Image 1: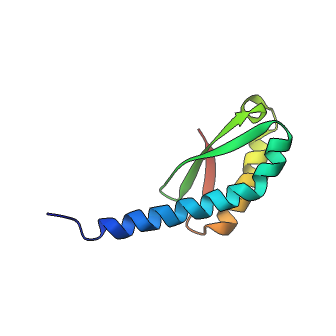
Image 2: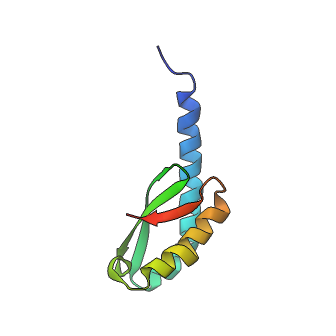
Length: 87
């Protein structure tokens, strides 16, 4: 038996991913300017998981960047996301 709602869930997930990526694109120029980047990993239970790479991976300011720039941008663009965590 095929789950009729599965197609809608995939569409919702794709739309959410696109909005998260668009939000990340607004902060990426600043992060890349410091030699880093941020990659979207997954969204689950109202949390977006990202990976900070390059110079951001080991930077002591990465938590501040995560919360003040990345999380603020993603939460503003995606009300169903309540926080962003690094993996």
